[in-house]
Length: 402
Image (cartoon, rainbow, N blue to C red):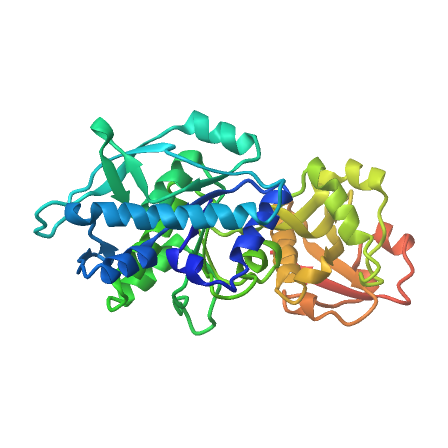
């Protein structure tokens, strides 16, 4: 689910449209909501009309409805044309997939045509998505007796994303991204965004409503909400396809986590362990071995992509457990993932009543010492481990478990 600011349709050198087409062509299903604020304000100004706003949203007065409809239709047609020009295989489609009703405004307006989404033709919309159509929703819709209502693009995107149970809601705007923290974090939880909004009452109302809408979408079941500066070339692809991203991501909970491995993780674990850049201390494991021992593995996931793993080997006498096969995908190193896996493994070992957690390394390992391990003598290890391993090339790290 992607929301596109109307301003972006006026930026002729923007690659956003080409990036949208590329994502659609590689199989990513997209529903696109576009605004038309710039087009409406320009047309009204050209015709000598003043307009008003409420909470940063343009008030669609009835006397201006014909011009507003013209501006939205023009923006919609331009977007369709640009997408069509990106390839014959692309199948953009637009239309009235929803219904609306009159919106109550706080201001004293004689007659307005602002509306709220009140219904969505989910079956029709899902069928279009299943047929690989790129669905485009303009910010207007019909209501009772065929009346036309003008919609706020933020509210429209929110309603469609939550009712469709979209995995992602991505907003591309032309405003600078909010500066949330000193470390300029690109990952925020809904709670932290709300706390930030409370501490920044001077934020323009339009941006406040936008962030509140994204936060509420996460609470209502959208897994990830993203806010991007659409003026940045390649921001959409960078946000979706690179570890660092290019904007702000909001989630209702952490999207990075350690969990027990599943059989469906087998190929991902193999790929990480068999990478030629892994440390020499990582013992290669066969596919059949990992399959048999899968319940002893932990994995670290970023948005459900497995990017790190480790194995916990508990010895028969129950006195000690080894943390083995600790490895992290090259693209995700130096982000604390190894430490997260070690801490999770240590907690699991503690729950098993073992008294010692240990690991072997062929070189000094800061990641273990940072997690409370220290270099110990091989003589402190279980007898079975001492018999079956040559310690001359290894440093043994251990940690007493309380």
